[in-house]
Length: 376
Image (tube, rainbow, N blue to C red; front, side):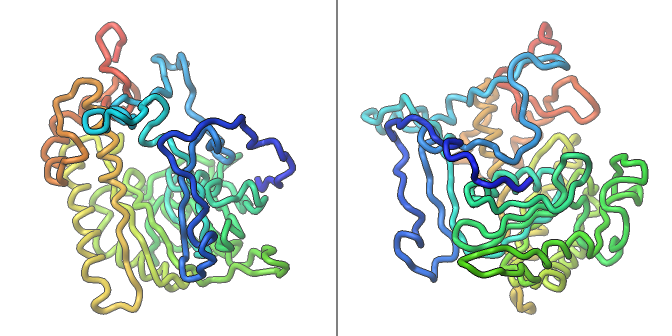
């Protein structure tokens, strides 16, 4: 899936005025400061659009084959003008959304992600931000099944780093070493609880370590020394009771042992369609508290570091904003505390669409509340 930059006009777009986004060069590039390991630049999407170069499954828009209608219009309260209109009436609100920006990243860090299909989708987006397309430096090392990324690598990134991702359906553990990764012998998806998924082996990681790429006139081998390994905790594939303090600690330990990572990051578990009961919701909250507690005390007796990415809170902000837009009486996420999210969530997040056995929550995916006539 590596694509050379053989289409000079691929990203060409007519010039458009920049409104609320001030585009500047990546910071360490403009300063020529090698002490800055990673920097980000925001861009107006009319000037530099995000093109989803590597995502193989885009969301269908319009009338859906299984019923319903999907639009890409964002809730008005996620638009720049709605947030600023009271205090800043002089700002032009016609051309900006809060989340409607594109980002480019420059880094010399060696970053490695481990997680399920959502991790792979995050990695696919990040690879574009890191320059994988423009540099022609992205490689699909192996597939989970036909056409679906299982292991990907961008080397080098813009800035000279590397970014790898591997799909796994269970946290690293010695017990799961050598077990099937995510499917049974017939190619069917399987849950770790059934003993048919969640495994790993060194054959998944060796292609990364042995990969040779060209940077600044030199052939470079990726090697085993990552700066950071990021885990997306695989709730859904793993049940709540499987995600324990011991599993988090073991995953962090193995990330250091296998990949040489001195920093290990865990993403908190967000509300999803897999959180389909109040009891599971409470269990997920306890998992997130446990992750924070492990991170808080880790440095006391380890030479590595554990960081926490508050992915759950970010998802809450987006979900609460949309819920308010479609008529739910919930708090403004910009002023809500974690306790408010936990108190209000059970009161409305279990409103579900009447589809499949893992129905999504209405405030997560709907632009307006379904009606009886819409069979929602």
